[in-house]
Length: 258
Image 1 (tube, rainbow, N blue to C red):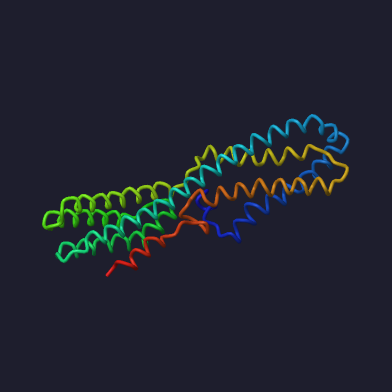
Image 2: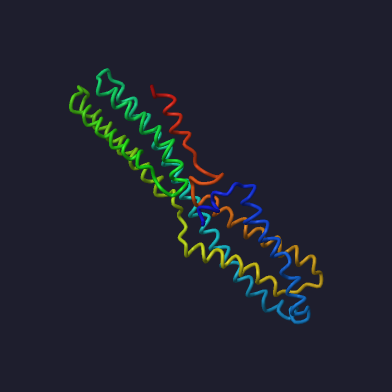
């Protein structure tokens, strides 16, 4: 469900996750005032004001913590893609050799990067991985082992070649792991429940100027649900409009393949 919400386009996600809840909250004070009455609600102002300040601080800290966590994970996923591309580019340069085994390894690297772009990215959007890409990476390791046995490359160069392949593997595992989101379900339950309770708390105040109170409640709800929308949008870094693309890998393919 969370991955589905993260994958919504902006033109649909913002109205559904931000505008509609904010509009619903806008009419909360009106409904409650008609049900309970102004006189009974106005008596809550002084006592409820202190309590709302505490509730607001607690919830704002929780939301800020969640935004920081998902942003760090989003950035980590982006760095992993760039590091994978950088390791692939270095590997291409290391295997620019005339031996047939080197040509086989370059072709294996071409295949891996192409499958990573064509298969891994759609799979990560569905919180899974491509088995074909994994097999292509295994084939790349096999080609590297054959090249290491037959080539006259210096041993430090061979060691660096396998080091870059290990970097590719590590970077791929990182992005596959982060594709599944970083906010646990229990935290999402707390965030969503906290948003509803924080906004609903304002319904129990009473102001003589009801339209002004409704607008203040709507503005608060808008800010709260915008914060939740930010978390939803970037929690799954390879899904939806705010996703990390495969452009770094495409650029390496364009520069070195063939």
